[in-house]
Amino acid sequence: MSDLELNTPWTAVSVLVVDDEPGMRAILKKALSKKFAQVDTAGSIEEAEEIRKRCHFDLLIVDINLPGRSGIEWHEAFDPNTRRSDVIFMTGYADLEMAIQALRAGASDFILKPFNLEQMMQSVSRCIERRLVERQNFALQRDVERSYPVDIIGDAASTQKMKKLITQLAPSIAAVLVEGESGTGK
Image: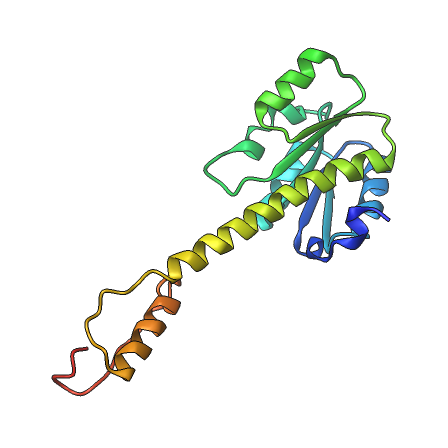
């Protein structure tokens, strides 16, 4: 049994497969759908861009040789100003220069076609595990930020309760209205 079959947080991960071969899209969608709640496919970069306007994907599996723009020319997939996705490139026409170009573009992995499904799933596993660690680190960082002391003076139980509430609400974007009688130090 592989790591994919044992790992339940994977259901929160979304994947987009971009390949001009309908058979390859179908095979990858079927295999990935067993592990992930959302797996979409596209036959071109243009179609993939339309899908990405509606949804963020944690992982993009992209064929390099596509009609129109190639996978490596899809600069929007690597835009640091947007939420970044991991990218696995695949191709049947590779040389060392193309692999280097793909990795320099920001690819997480590079797989040669034809590949066996286990090879692809191992690559996916590495990418998703790295993504989950990033998410956990972000959540831990937020928890640490919440535990910073609040510079509010007072030792009363109600003041302590308010300090705790402020630290819990501070990271959110919610608006908070503090009410109380005049002179209570709101």
